[in-house]
Amino acid sequence: MTFGFAPSSAASFSSSAASATRMLEPAEWAAAGIPLLRNPREVVSGLHARHPLGPATAVVAVLDPDERLRASASFTSRRSPADGWMFRNALLSQLRRVIPHDLRRRTPVRTAVLLYCREGDARWTQEDGAWMWGLRDACTLHGLRCGAYITLTRDGWQVLGEDRGGRRPNAASAPEPFATAEAPPPPHRTGGVASDVLRRAAAR
Image (cartoon, rainbow, N blue to C red):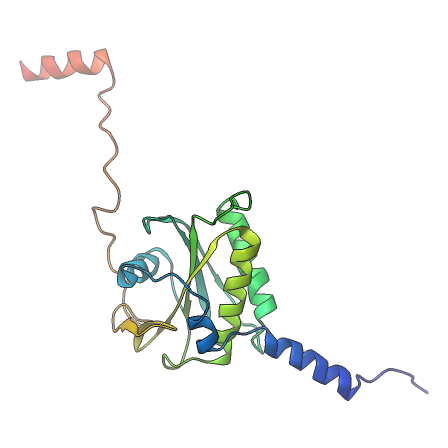
């Protein structure tokens, strides 16, 4: 004879109800006062160029007040069903790995944004809602401002909660080359006095 415990229907309902609360509806996201990106296409193109993106790939990036990229990390998450708590933990782990926290600041200075490459069209899904919840909570725990949530599909990119998007880059397009103006060229090193002597000798 075998004895065991079957999960009660109440426990099952409680678990699913808790999971359902760990996501944000588009209206909740829009009401949260998420700061707008000045140039979302530039941010998307930069992340698309830096990270190989395939289905279920997430890129979390930290921007400074001038929207310059300070750190980013990509990872694949195939969590099913979508769970904001698990997404929060994955994002927090990546943030801790690539950039120090800002918990000592009274007001967050840096902003985290999330780019998620997935199948389907640009319409909001429950998975998007779970990522939104996870991003907001991870930012709170790491002392960052919660920034935009962006989806990347074969149709293009879309900043959810805003009426902004574009066809390129998209999930099937090749990465664009980095802009040469993103960073100044490194200072030219002459090599000191010996190098100057050799240069004058060559000039003769």
